Length: 438
Image 1 (cartoon, rainbow, N blue to C red):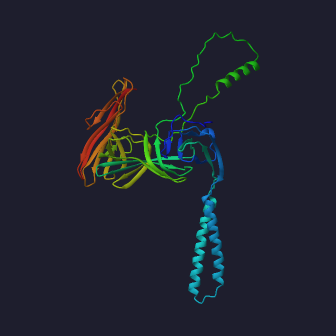
Image 2 (cartoon, rainbow, N blue to C red):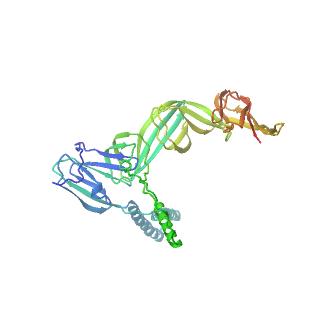
């Protein structure tokens, strides 16, 4: 008896389907009592893994068919409706109706519907219709409960995080949308794996490097020398083949059971929802935009995967952007846009350059006056950050100036934290002096 790509695994009698989503491909798993499966037309037999708890007699493709195009069906229905409306319009117009208002209303209603259908047909005709083909796989085996696995390169996976801050809590919903499946899958187990398959599973083959003494260079005529050089350049410039990997997701292992997935539709999956305590404050970048930004400090219970994220503040949508991965148990910050209740004024206080008496050095001073006002009716916690230049040479000296007592970090960051009462204003000077050889 012949086995077709028989797996070492024993098939389970539970007729469950599955989707295994690796970082580089999607594997679909289907189970059937009678050994019959609907598959994409382009799938080859050597791409299918078949497993059973008995020997397989044979497996073959049959029932090749074209799937109905939904757009074509819509166009046909609307075209028939439009023709009927045009025929009825002529009948109504030729009828003898004493009430002119009634006749006018009927004709107007008919023409309005014709216009609407014509617009829909115009739009549908601009859409490119793709021909979908299918075929059946029949697995002939004496036992019941046959399982197959095959790659589906048409499946699309989109990840999105929904991040909501409200009442001192941060709620993070991690979602994924699976779309463009080739067939419906009921009672499906969806698994996300944090690695690729069939890529970089073994190190490069070791090959020794041999060195030998070069023979003395021979004097050749110009054409021969140029040909030799061209040959060497050509061999050195040959590109090396390298496997490229398109990352579908950055999730750690997730498993969601008993999902019902619909073919050619968007299927939303909630992978994880967590709610953690969060601290709201304001971050002022005096070194940059000189604005106050809502800052939410939190520590996640579970990893937050990199994905497009929608941000909500007190149930109000703020913005969308792509956010990087956040590890569980590590303190992080999320910014929710500008807080216009914090007013910041930055004015030049002092900028001048002094030379030493003997002309060997010069000192440049830069100083600014900051005024920060809380125009809201609530206390506002503020983190203010400025910077001083960082010297990379012993002859260049940098000294912080102004009212801020905190010392700069090794990268020149100067940070202070304070709280402003409603309508309170805080004023201070900040600057630095740089002394260097002329």
